[in-house]
Amino acid sequence: MTFDSTNDFSNGQRVLVIGLGRSGLATVEVLRARGAEVWAIDDKPAELIEPAIREIEAAGATFLHRDELEPLVSGFGAAVVSPGVPLTTPTVRRVQDAGIPVYSEIEVAYRICRAPILAVTGTKGKTTTTALLGAMLAADGRTVHVGGNIGNALIRETAKAAPEDWVVAEVSSFQLESIRSFKPRVSLILNLSPDHLDRYHSMEEYREAKLRIFANQGPGDIFVGNLDDPYFEPLSTDVESYRIPCQAWWFSRHPHRNSTLYARDGKIYFARPGAPRAQAVMPIDEIPLLGEHNVINVMGAAAAALAAGVPIAAIREAVKRFQALPHRLQTVGEIDGVRYVDDSKGTNPGAVIAALKSFDHRRVVAICGGKAKGTDFSEMGDELDERARAVVLIGEAADAIATHVVRAAIHRADTMEEAVDVARGLAQPGDVVLLSPGCASFDMFESAEHRGQVFTAAVHALAERGAPRGA
Image 1 (cartoon, rainbow, N blue to C red):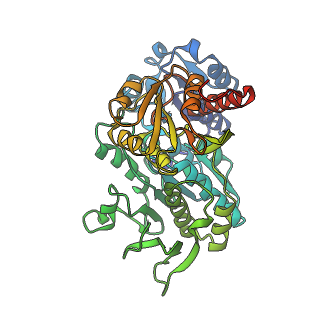
Image 2: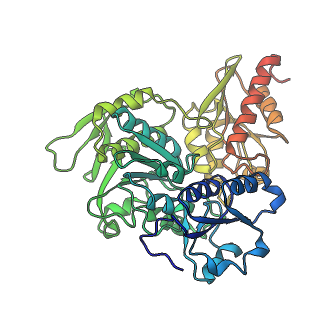
Image 3: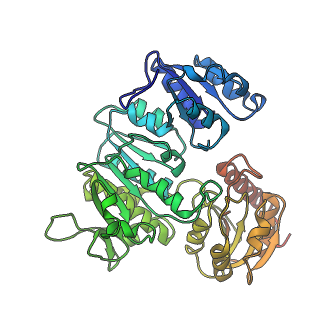
């Protein structure tokens, strides 16, 4: 049994779900509700994922141990791979060798979706931008479903979306790798910086994965891109413009002949294609989020919202009301004039650099480190030298980061609680203690969210016990 491009993963279809993380569990739930016969497999030992196994079995799916796959593999019509599972794993390769088509969760989510989709990707800022874009649509009175890499599985959101609703999807390069017909009404790429180079062989391969977001778009769709990003600016020129199969809108921090949205004299302007003059969208100083990078996030979200027909008034109101998301430059406490900021979602060097630029020079004590993802820490080290008073290093990547920090004082800590205590002793009134790891969390924590929660708890414990500076 094979599937063609019209496959909707419903009654009687035999599907294998690979990976039982958040996305995989949601896929099992939705496909079972649609009447598909579902099996699931995970490369982790069964004893480590017992709660997930119980959950899928309660939904009527069957768990397969790895040694049970071989006699059954040819009977599947399709496989759905979770974003955290590389396409190079033995399980995925065995399924592909059997001629079974492999889809990403967002591909399946798209196929069952009846509403238009606005899709957002980029190395950093995409979660904030996705949430902000959803808020802009909601401010216009639309029913909006927000999902994907933002934390709740996209397939669960698209399954309940009505034709008159809108879906905003945060999509990662991992999720885009195995799409086939995924076709958003509006696609947005914010930026690209070194990340996930433990999965991709080069930045060009990483870039190509991101560019798949518009691969299936057509004349009635719109792509929104960041004209200031050197990895994507060539798409606006004759060199690569042929690659974009739909209308392209560009945003930039400065006026440019290709800019649809740009900043000038402290305001953001919208130059609607074909309109005689640009319209003011909002003053930049109305943006309540910290950092220059968040101006870019707002401009990207605004451009995508305008492409979807959201009026300027709704966009401006949504931005003014928007608050920082958890673990993204979120202030979690202040003790004796020192502010503590949780940026645990800053999981790559580019995010750390953007976070550091949000604060005054030499007024930051940075907590960095974790599990490296094959990235180069040299630029991050330069920025720490330029802007940090001191750096407290944790996790597996501590030594790798330390080799690139020359001038800023370096301290080590074995736990997050110790790191907060050390940072407390180094910070002076008016400083910021900034958790911005530049790394994944899995060497010490369950997730980036868990890492941020431990940091926040340590700050609150410090405040409660009233420890003197340097204690």
